[in-house]
Image (tube, rainbow, N blue to C red; front, side, top):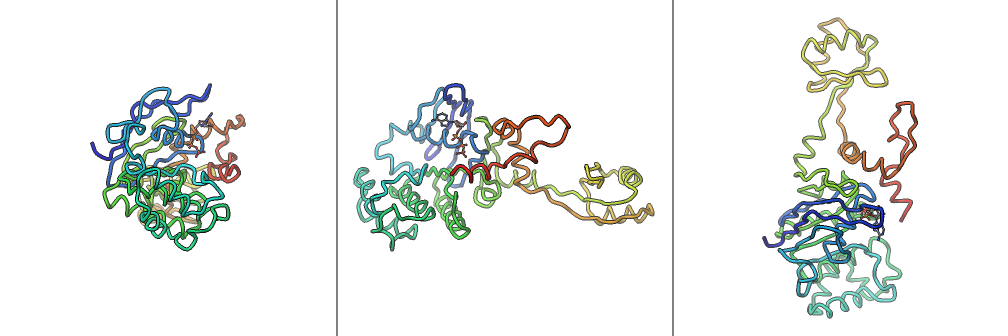
Length: 328
Ligand SMILES: Nc1ncnc2c1ncn2[C@@H]1O[C@H](COP(=O)(O)OP(=O)(O)OP(=O)(O)O)[C@@H](O)[C@H]1O
């Protein structure tokens, strides 16, 4: 099928490390597909293999039914941004793009077009050395768009951008997908992908954890519950259970009622003559759902010692975003 990225039973080992472990999924055109996973999940390795920059230990990636290396004028078939900083610092933005255009038989006039598209026209003659992270990301996107490709692979394009830059990339990706292009974009930020992607592929420890539409993921994971603070939790629990409400007691002694609404809980409490100090509706965040889904793989990476006291070790562990911030 045209414009489809087909990942088939893909694996990659580096010595003892299994970076990618039997991954299979398909990235389709006309939508933004978010590729999500905590740090070290194998996203960049998968993208590198799609571009023939790394050899799979097993399986394969086909784009339009072919290996990337078989594509003629690959920049016109697949635009990619893997490591935006990977640009000669002494070159100007214009010089860098012109060099790429010439080696892919792309007319020089296109360089001006993409510089304008990413808002770098005024900085075109400046050396890349002095570019901010946001400008470098924009230049990386300009390079990816140079050949007007139907397929785009972007590795963490919003990394380090300010809110305006994040919104700009989000709109750009949505626009490119609306034109019928295949947009495959990696991120470790669930919330950002929920706003940008139509479809989500989630991996952890190199394995597929979810391949679902964003709408379904959001619906399944943003369920809310009613939190009740009462001095008589046992009686309240019985009253709710008798009314068919699923209820559990949290560690802090409050009750969580599922599949009901705050008004109904209030009415049941009044009917039973129960004292209530607080009733409120809480919605689990998507980020929490993502942490839950990928929790086991993140746990493996962080290798936190077992506290042995039954407490949740996840609370004490650095989150993926924090580790990333420290690394880059
Ligand atoms: N060239 C390499 N040599 C050895 N190990 C590697 C190499 N590249 C990646 N790895 C390992 O493979 C695993 C997957 O890394 P990868 O960079 O693909 O993950 P990622 O999901 O892109 O993470 P991040 O969000 O941190 O970029 C990690 O354990 C990483 O240390």
